[in-house]
Amino acid sequence: MGKPMRTYIDITVNPNSAGPSEVVHAMLKLGISPIFGPHDFYIDWTTEADFKRKFKEVHKVLQSLNISYRLQTYEVAQEEARTIAVMTKKNGP
Image (tube, rainbow, N blue to C red; front, side):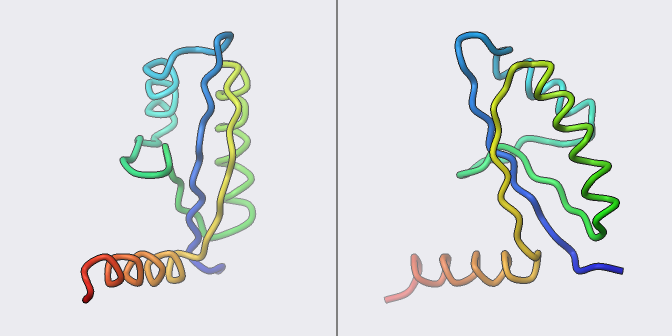
């Protein structure tokens, strides 16, 4: 089994694309909820097959809505460590 991974999805809406609420609705139908913060959505996965299956669906949906998107992937453990470091830096002396 692979390491737990998290891929963030950042979307870009343009004048010819579906509106934000349509995008959220389409992603919710895939079981992907929006998040607050610097990214729009995320997906957790562990194997390459899992990644390919999930992002094939995401790509198809976002392409049909004329949405541009960007992916950023991290190991979950590294992402949690990075988040703790940022929080510590903000709350520290």
